[in-house]
Amino acid sequence: MTDKYRLNINTLPENLVAFNTSLIKNTKTVWIDKKQISKLNPSLANDKEFLENFSFGIPSDFISADLFDNKYKKKLYADRYGSDLGGNGGSARCGYLDNFHLKGVGKTPLSGAEDTWHSYGGFSLVEAMCEIIYSKIFEKIMPRGVVSCFGIIFTGEKTALRPTFEGERNNIRGKGCILVRSSSIRPAHLIPNQSYTAQRDDYLWLFKDTYRVRTINQKINLLLGGRKNYIKFIGNFLSSCADQFSFSFINRIYHGAINASNIEISGKWLDLTTATFVSHSFNYQNRENMYAFNDERDAILHIAGEVLHQYDKYNNLFSNKSILECYYMSQYKAYFRANLITAIGLPKKCYNILKENIDYRLFSDIVKNLIENKKTKRNTLKISISCDPLFHYINTLYLDLLFNRCKIQAFQKTVNLSKSISKIKNYNCFIKSCIIRLYRRTLLTPIYYRENIIKQLLLYEHKIFDRHSYSSFIEEFISTTEWIFREDECTKTTIIKTKKIAIDYDAIADNYVLYIFEKSEKIIIDFFSDMFYFVSKYDSEVVVCGFSCISFLNEIKSTFCNIERG
Image (cartoon, rainbow, N blue to C red; front, side, top):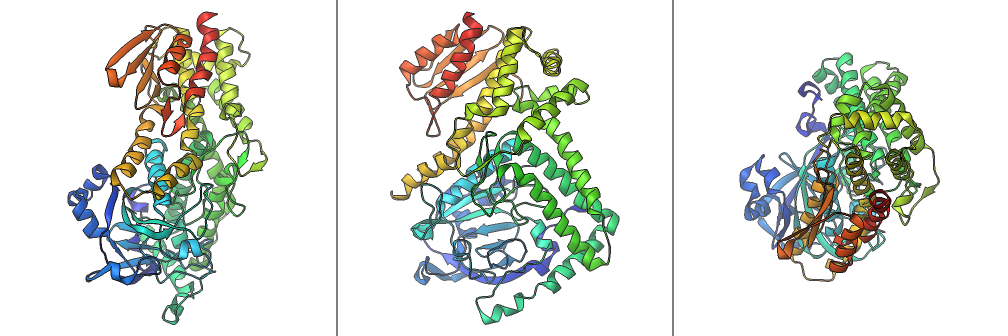
């Protein structure tokens, strides 16, 4: 999106409602993305400066007044917006401070009366950790990224409501925090709120939202230079979302709470406390009132349609929404082809040679039809990921290639063309590298299941706060993206990397290299079945981020045993 079509929160002051906060005493840093925040303000990479700048909030039933130092005050701004907000008028527990957005600062003037979880003012450390982890993972792997999260501040042992092991919401108190992230403009900022009920008489003026929405939409028309540029503005949003949601669908990534307030106008995601990886085996849905996995891309058309309706309404214009719908679906299909490459195990660079290839386009359409079939909605992820239809189909095709029995010529030609630009000259070795990337991106995604993350985090809830434990937990998850989702081609392909060991496949020598970190030892083994036997004796679980990967290695062993030993 060009700068001409960019907006920021300060462009639309009509959305902002000021409120006063005080410094919260005895806060502690949980984790800071020092590299990223240094780009904005190097001093904030310092723990002391970070706490002094962002440890602000409002006294409540969860953080009593005696925990505040009223000598130090700051004015924050809650942002008004529409969408399905459970009776809130916008940010019920968030406030803007300069170019930062603080989540968990207490009940803002926009807090309503219906949705306790979002309107009591606090933010669970468990949920903040989930949001940071998914934000940093998606920031690295998704084409349009996410709204940047810079750090977490611990506010106390009983300062928030916390979820259960199943991720359900309840009235149990636990560790609370403030999440510091970047400011953002969302589609919800441009549409009306029809459910807000003010909790105080002096906030009743906020109830009528017509003036705000009319003023904003007329101002945007002027800022962008009229209807033609506004359509380009909406088109940029749709194109970005087509890229983002085609990637998330292919790679089994579920936002879990898509609406007009949980996505930026640039297409970036935010509010990722309900995010998770899923399987294509069924249509996962975390709650009845949320879009299911297969349907999240359709939410964008509803969001864009409402935004465009408000613009037309207050500028006395009429737009043909069907044209934008056709544009979105054509962009989605194009980005689907681009984003499919790495999901099926091919190196990312192959798209440059495949994007205009008729065989690859045909194969992409076959895969799209395969995984877009409507499936039964389910609210559990307890199913073998190896049953995933995309994984099963591509895995079968690779094995058919190796044994000269592939009947899908479009796939065979796609792989052969990709092989032509590879550094790996041996055909079988190239296919084995592709299979490893396919297995990694599919069979290891349960590491990132929300249930796996929350269950581990809740164990910390019963312990005294220890920054090192939380910080290490975050860093361990982030580090996995460097090898699980690596998209470029290497002659050595990482199969697994834990705190104890790493295994690489050397496609030039056609053997496997085991690194044992504590012994600084390197062992070369010719067959993966022998490697599996050796590793399982040394480390029976092969744990990555609390998830046992032994079944993943066993799947590779079973597949490669037939290839390597005939």
